[in-house]
Length: 195
Ligand SMILES: Cc1cc2nc3c(=O)[nH]c(=O)nc-3n(C[C@H](O)[C@H](O)[C@H](O)COP(=O)(O)O)c2cc1C
Image (cartoon, rainbow, N blue to C red):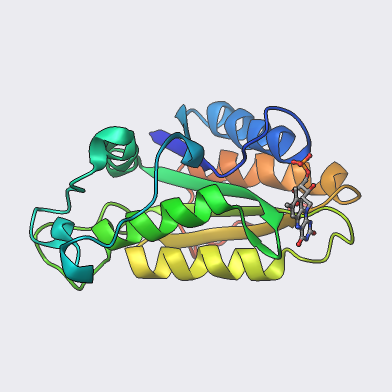
């Protein structure tokens, strides 16, 4: 199973990075092959073709995709499971992830345009928002990500908010969630509580 992590984190260290490593560690321990895509490696959606988007007429392909978006889109298309992780900026996901979600949704909306199945269709998706300061601003970013997943046909496996003081136990939760996904646990399947 291929497990892709889409990161909206512009930093190479810190809390969000540590939690990204927990996703990767969990996915690997669950037997997955992992790959990380940075949402900061590409530009934003230009809403081309008079706002309608040429991608909708062009088999979901972005006209400007050579900037790294084609690679990201194809990587997600070939994945069996995907995680999205972002620091909380201004009570939202980071600018990088927001741009990526907007662009990906434009090309990969589910159910609206039937050239082919949207890239996230039926895939388990893990969502992580990493707050700082008060540590209370994780709900809205998780909601933003959840909405994106609904628009693109994925299935939210879990949505986890982290901050400085819950990282000790949420880090383990993230590890376990990624591992469970990699082991093939399906969205909605009951995992008995081991105590
Ligand atoms: C521009 C900017 C805006 C931020 N806005 C928020 C915010 O609205 N709410 C919040 O909880 N944290 C906010 N933070 C804090 C980061 O989310 C937090 O430091 C980060 O997610 C966790 O730490 P990391 O940078 O070590 O990964 C902001 C940080 C920056 C740089």
